[in-house]
Amino acid sequence: MTLKNQMTRTALNLALFLFVLATLFLNPVSTLAEGNVVALPNFTDFSQMVQNNEADVLRGVYVSSVLALPVVQQPTSNPGYVSSRNGLATQFSMAAQYGNIGLLAHNNLSGRSFSKLAVGQEVRLIYGNGSVEYFVITEILQYQALQPTSMRSAFRDLATDETITANQLFERVYTGKQHVTFQTCIEANGDLSWGRLFIVAMPKIQDPNFGQLDQHLLQ
Image (tube, rainbow, N blue to C red; front, side, top):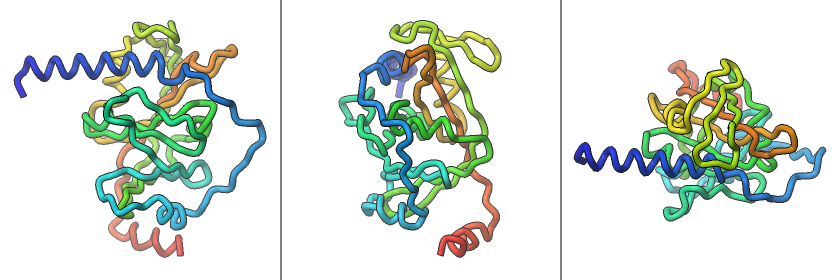
Protein backbone atom coordinates (compact mmCIF):
# COMPACT_ATOMS: atom_id res chain seq x y z
CA MET A 1 0.00 0.00 0.00
CA THR A 2 1.43 3.41 -0.97
CA LEU A 3 1.82 6.17 1.60
CA LYS A 4 -0.91 8.18 -0.15
CA ASN A 5 -3.36 5.25 -0.05
CA GLN A 6 -2.50 4.59 3.59
CA MET A 7 -3.15 8.24 4.50
CA THR A 8 -6.44 8.16 2.59
CA ARG A 9 -7.52 4.99 4.40
CA THR A 10 -6.57 6.48 7.78
CA ALA A 11 -8.50 9.66 7.04
CA LEU A 12 -11.53 7.62 5.99
CA ASN A 13 -11.36 5.51 9.14
CA LEU A 14 -11.15 8.57 11.36
CA ALA A 15 -14.04 10.19 9.50
CA LEU A 16 -16.11 7.06 10.10
CA PHE A 17 -15.14 7.09 13.77
CA LEU A 18 -16.31 10.70 14.03
CA PHE A 19 -19.63 9.57 12.59
CA VAL A 20 -19.81 6.68 15.05
CA LEU A 21 -19.03 8.91 18.04
CA ALA A 22 -21.65 11.43 17.00
CA THR A 23 -24.51 9.13 16.03
CA LEU A 24 -23.88 5.62 17.33
CA PHE A 25 -25.98 5.94 20.43
CA LEU A 26 -28.26 8.83 19.50
CA ASN A 27 -31.01 6.72 17.94
CA PRO A 28 -33.65 6.26 20.63
CA VAL A 29 -34.43 2.67 21.57
CA SER A 30 -36.71 1.32 24.23
CA THR A 31 -35.25 1.49 27.73
CA LEU A 32 -35.14 -1.63 29.88
CA ALA A 33 -37.43 -1.67 32.87
CA GLU A 34 -35.55 -1.09 36.11
CA GLY A 35 -35.03 -4.13 38.28
CA ASN A 36 -34.92 -6.74 35.51
CA VAL A 37 -32.27 -9.27 36.53
CA VAL A 38 -31.29 -12.18 34.33
CA ALA A 39 -29.18 -15.02 35.73
CA LEU A 40 -25.96 -15.50 33.77
CA PRO A 41 -25.16 -18.93 32.34
CA ASN A 42 -21.96 -20.61 33.44
CA PHE A 43 -19.05 -20.25 31.07
CA THR A 44 -19.19 -23.76 29.62
CA ASP A 45 -22.88 -23.51 28.74
CA PHE A 46 -22.46 -20.03 27.28
CA SER A 47 -19.49 -21.08 25.17
CA GLN A 48 -21.37 -24.02 23.70
CA MET A 49 -24.39 -21.83 23.00
CA VAL A 50 -22.53 -19.26 20.87
CA GLN A 51 -20.31 -21.61 18.84
CA ASN A 52 -20.99 -22.02 15.11
CA ASN A 53 -17.75 -23.72 13.90
CA GLU A 54 -16.37 -20.51 12.33
CA ALA A 55 -12.88 -20.35 13.78
CA ASP A 56 -12.13 -16.71 12.93
CA VAL A 57 -15.46 -15.21 13.97
CA LEU A 58 -15.88 -13.70 17.43
CA ARG A 59 -19.12 -15.09 18.83
CA GLY A 60 -19.26 -14.17 22.50
CA VAL A 61 -17.77 -12.23 25.41
CA TYR A 62 -17.94 -13.42 29.02
CA VAL A 63 -17.02 -11.75 32.31
CA SER A 64 -17.88 -13.82 35.36
CA SER A 65 -20.80 -12.46 37.41
CA VAL A 66 -21.09 -9.42 35.09
CA LEU A 67 -21.98 -10.28 31.51
CA ALA A 68 -22.41 -13.09 28.99
CA LEU A 69 -23.12 -11.52 25.60
CA PRO A 70 -23.28 -13.12 22.17
CA VAL A 71 -21.40 -10.95 19.66
CA VAL A 72 -22.78 -9.94 16.26
CA GLN A 73 -20.84 -8.44 13.38
CA GLN A 74 -21.43 -5.10 11.69
CA PRO A 75 -22.74 -5.30 8.11
CA THR A 76 -19.93 -4.61 5.65
CA SER A 77 -21.74 -1.55 4.32
CA ASN A 78 -22.65 -0.11 7.72
CA PRO A 79 -19.67 0.59 10.04
CA GLY A 80 -21.93 2.60 12.34
CA TYR A 81 -24.29 -0.29 13.04
CA VAL A 82 -24.95 -1.32 16.65
CA SER A 83 -27.53 -3.95 17.51
CA SER A 84 -30.73 -2.57 19.04
CA ARG A 85 -31.46 -5.93 20.71
CA ASN A 86 -30.77 -6.28 24.38
CA GLY A 87 -28.40 -9.10 25.31
CA LEU A 88 -26.02 -8.61 22.37
CA ALA A 89 -22.72 -6.81 21.77
CA THR A 90 -21.58 -5.64 18.35
CA GLN A 91 -18.00 -6.04 17.12
CA PHE A 92 -16.59 -2.74 15.83
CA SER A 93 -15.13 -3.46 12.39
CA MET A 94 -12.85 -0.40 12.40
CA ALA A 95 -11.01 -1.65 15.49
CA ALA A 96 -10.34 -4.96 13.74
CA GLN A 97 -8.46 -3.09 11.01
CA TYR A 98 -5.90 -2.19 13.67
CA GLY A 99 -5.67 -5.71 15.07
CA ASN A 100 -7.85 -4.99 18.09
CA ILE A 101 -11.33 -5.93 19.30
CA GLY A 102 -13.98 -3.26 19.81
CA LEU A 103 -17.27 -4.21 21.47
CA LEU A 104 -20.17 -1.76 21.21
CA ALA A 105 -23.55 -1.62 22.93
CA HIS A 106 -26.25 0.95 23.65
CA ASN A 107 -26.04 2.22 27.21
CA ASN A 108 -29.74 1.56 27.83
CA LEU A 109 -29.42 -2.03 26.60
CA SER A 110 -26.40 -4.36 26.90
CA GLY A 111 -24.10 -1.39 27.49
CA ARG A 112 -25.53 -1.10 30.98
CA SER A 113 -23.40 -4.06 31.99
CA PHE A 114 -20.24 -2.32 30.70
CA SER A 115 -20.46 0.18 33.55
CA LYS A 116 -20.23 -2.72 36.03
CA LEU A 117 -16.83 -3.83 34.71
CA ALA A 118 -13.80 -3.17 36.92
CA VAL A 119 -10.02 -3.22 36.67
CA GLY A 120 -8.63 -6.69 37.33
CA GLN A 121 -11.62 -8.64 36.00
CA GLU A 122 -11.00 -11.39 33.47
CA VAL A 123 -12.56 -11.08 30.01
CA ARG A 124 -13.05 -14.20 27.86
CA LEU A 125 -13.62 -14.00 24.11
CA ILE A 126 -15.21 -17.06 22.52
CA TYR A 127 -14.78 -17.82 18.82
CA GLY A 128 -16.98 -19.91 16.58
CA ASN A 129 -14.88 -23.04 16.92
CA GLY A 130 -14.88 -22.83 20.72
CA SER A 131 -11.40 -21.36 21.11
CA VAL A 132 -11.04 -18.80 23.90
CA GLU A 133 -8.84 -15.73 24.34
CA TYR A 134 -8.25 -14.36 27.84
CA PHE A 135 -7.82 -10.69 28.73
CA VAL A 136 -7.68 -8.66 31.95
CA ILE A 137 -9.25 -5.22 32.36
CA THR A 138 -6.49 -2.69 32.96
CA GLU A 139 -8.07 0.71 32.38
CA ILE A 140 -11.41 2.50 32.51
CA LEU A 141 -11.69 5.77 30.59
CA GLN A 142 -14.56 8.26 30.78
CA TYR A 143 -15.02 11.28 28.55
CA GLN A 144 -17.56 14.06 28.28
CA ALA A 145 -18.58 14.83 24.70
CA LEU A 146 -18.43 18.62 24.63
CA GLN A 147 -20.85 18.63 21.68
CA PRO A 148 -22.62 15.24 21.92
CA THR A 149 -24.49 15.52 18.59
CA SER A 150 -21.61 16.99 16.58
CA MET A 151 -19.23 14.99 14.42
CA ARG A 152 -16.56 17.54 15.34
CA SER A 153 -16.99 17.28 19.10
CA ALA A 154 -13.96 17.36 21.35
CA PHE A 155 -13.84 15.15 24.45
CA ARG A 156 -12.89 15.99 28.03
CA ASP A 157 -11.18 13.29 30.06
CA LEU A 158 -13.12 13.15 33.33
CA ALA A 159 -10.05 11.91 35.24
CA THR A 160 -7.47 14.43 34.03
CA ASP A 161 -9.62 17.27 32.61
CA GLU A 162 -7.59 17.00 29.39
CA THR A 163 -9.45 17.88 26.19
CA ILE A 164 -8.68 15.85 23.08
CA THR A 165 -10.05 15.53 19.55
CA ALA A 166 -12.06 12.58 18.28
CA ASN A 167 -9.03 11.52 16.23
CA GLN A 168 -6.86 11.45 19.34
CA LEU A 169 -9.55 9.53 21.21
CA PHE A 170 -9.74 6.90 18.47
CA GLU A 171 -5.97 6.43 18.52
CA ARG A 172 -5.96 6.18 22.32
CA VAL A 173 -8.64 3.48 22.61
CA TYR A 174 -8.39 1.48 19.38
CA THR A 175 -4.77 1.51 18.17
CA GLY A 176 -1.56 0.15 19.66
CA LYS A 177 -0.78 -3.22 21.20
CA GLN A 178 -3.38 -5.99 21.10
CA HIS A 179 -6.32 -5.26 23.38
CA VAL A 180 -10.09 -5.32 23.76
CA THR A 181 -12.11 -2.12 24.15
CA PHE A 182 -15.70 -2.02 25.36
CA GLN A 183 -17.48 1.17 24.27
CA THR A 184 -20.81 2.66 25.29
CA CYS A 185 -22.22 6.06 26.23
CA ILE A 186 -22.46 7.78 29.60
CA GLU A 187 -25.85 9.20 30.52
CA ALA A 188 -25.98 12.46 32.47
CA ASN A 189 -28.50 15.26 32.96
CA GLY A 190 -31.09 13.27 31.03
CA ASP A 191 -28.83 12.98 27.97
CA LEU A 192 -28.10 9.36 26.97
CA SER A 193 -25.09 10.42 24.89
CA TRP A 194 -23.57 12.98 27.30
CA GLY A 195 -20.26 11.12 27.41
CA ARG A 196 -18.34 8.03 26.34
CA LEU A 197 -17.15 5.08 28.40
CA PHE A 198 -14.25 2.86 27.32
CA ILE A 199 -13.07 -0.22 29.20
CA VAL A 200 -9.70 -1.54 28.02
CA ALA A 201 -8.50 -5.12 28.58
CA MET A 202 -5.03 -6.44 27.76
CA PRO A 203 -4.05 -10.06 27.00
CA LYS A 204 -3.78 -12.20 30.11
CA ILE A 205 -0.39 -13.72 30.84
CA GLN A 206 -1.34 -17.29 31.59
CA ASP A 207 0.34 -19.82 33.81
CA PRO A 208 1.33 -22.92 31.76
CA ASN A 209 -1.22 -24.91 33.77
CA PHE A 210 -3.92 -22.22 33.64
CA GLY A 211 -5.96 -23.81 30.88
CA GLN A 212 -6.02 -27.19 32.58
CA LEU A 213 -6.93 -25.66 35.93
CA ASP A 214 -9.62 -23.49 34.38
CA GLN A 215 -11.29 -26.42 32.69
CA HIS A 216 -11.20 -28.42 35.93
CA LEU A 217 -12.95 -25.63 37.81
CA LEU A 218 -15.66 -25.37 35.18
CA GLN A 219 -16.60 -29.05 35.28
